[in-house]
Length: 295
Ligand SMILES: [Zn+2]
Picture (cartoon, rainbow, N blue to C red):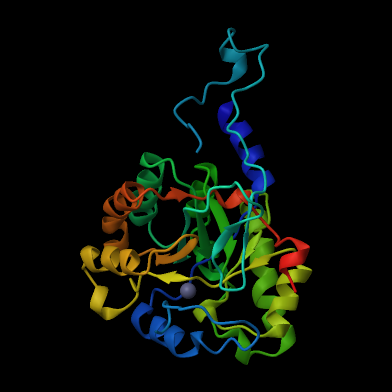
């Protein structure tokens, strides 16, 4: 019962997809770097990728559990909209009095492998943290069960385009297809369309912002790159952790990937973030920017 309820809740949230290029990861992510700062439509943050639950233990059906049969199921509270993504792609409160000392956790370019997905999900559960998994369509097509697992375990799916190509170089129709095909396959796979979009390599333009808006997608790149894609981080979880800690600030939008050393780093990273007093923002608490902030 709880499981079903959780699905419904997550539906309220929204999801996205991502995946892609980490297969040929190094070279692709290097490209990321080169184009990342080229998003002319935004004020570029210090970007780095590129350059620079649900309780599943209780799956009993209500019918099998007379004591619960007439009760409302235990639900995981869906947060109110409390935050938005600002022009520098930080997560900021919508109003005074809301905790500013938060970070947003994101994992791009999956879903790729069962073991890595399980590792990330287990660590997120351990820290009661929610994250956005920005997936690529071609990987969702190859691994639909992994997408379902991410969704069913209460994490949020984001759209990272179908092929992980530089959408700024595509014509408008192709760019739109790259985004909308992911919206569709995610809905077909988990029953909900993504609510968040992150362009591959952080590379976008006005047209891409418009495509995102047409699909009710909140557009973001990131503001704290773990550099886990970089060859200097390969097999070095400590380097990934240090890169994040070095750039840490209120509202950090932390870019990570589905990579073995990131999976290995995550528990210690989250422990360190907690130790410094940071909370993990629930992506479902992120809304469109308030009107006065959009100008
Ligand atoms: Zn990517």
